[in-house]
Length: 81
Image (tube, rainbow, N blue to C red; front, top):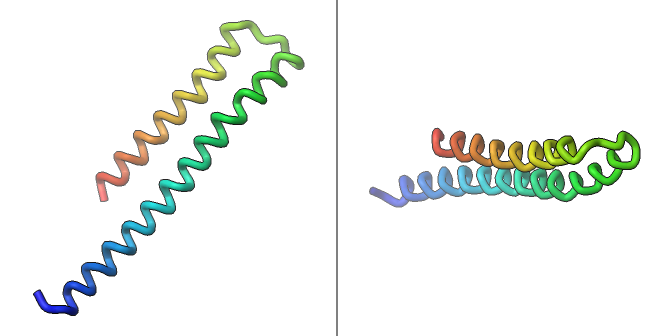
């Protein structure tokens, strides 16, 4: 392998690594924001709608489940590339 092929391979690697790092960072920021805000939303929902304990648990559980599903979907997509 000559120098130009190594340079090309390095450029491809850096491009793919940069793309995946940015996408992962955005996903982490979105998940952390969602999981932080859900606590505030539940407090507001309690005051406005008076939900039952089951309804509050379902809202919080759906938030956690969606974060896990999103991470699994992204991992599957990254492995496919």
